[in-house]
Image 1 (tube, helix red, strand yellow):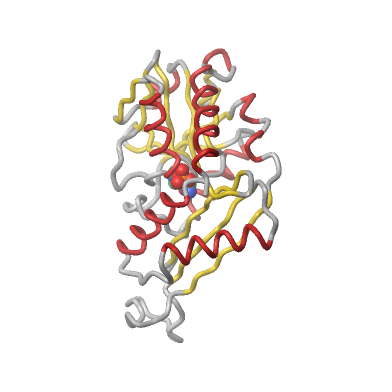
Image 2 (cartoon, rainbow, N blue to C red; image 1 turned 180 degrees about the vertical axis):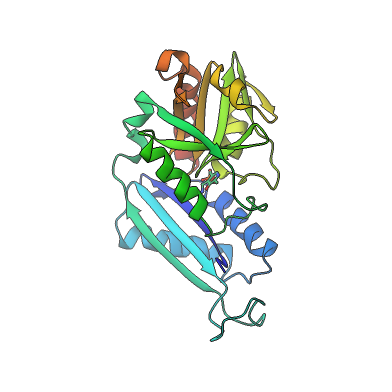
Length: 259
Ligand code: PMP
């Protein structure tokens, strides 16, 4: 049933980036699916820290997944409410995560129709369509795909999408149409603090192609510039100053706040 939810938390300098944000979103995903929480946030933090320690992770990420548990039966109805949820976590060491060379050259993306379900705000493990879109991007020789619905961009396969016009960062508002990115929330807060204007509104593919800059955010790519959309180069195919600056600010501020 794809009856599971997940979180990916980055580790920098051996510390967790925005753990509180991920724990809060996990609680929301669980609650939207009437799934029991496997443990308290404090226990979750202990488990994350213990995994970082045992695996000696300096830079990398922690994947966490909660599934509804094993009732010993297959049924479309959820298992009995007292079924114990299954919690699985693993770490991935990614030395150089924060210094990804792609941040200097930027990503190229293609657009694909958004054929996902209507509750993209819940972070479920049902990721087959995003995976197909990623493969379409690979087949086209680019880095990622942006989903299009009713002529407007929703988000990337595993990231939130932004365009920049002058001093304004434009991104789709929160709704059931997109995942409520933890990195997105931090980015918008930090952008406002850096005297950038933020407009939360839908934007079209054409608007994106003629924007000054574009970028994406996610917990593991942080802020990643986008330099080409469907073959159209943005800022002459070079990484733009605002995406670069926001990446620097994000990494600096989030490292300071890491736990
Ligand atoms: N949108 C989608 C569809 C995603 O899968 C992700 C990452 N899991 C994001 C946005 C970015 O969310 P976050 O910043 O919390 O990683």
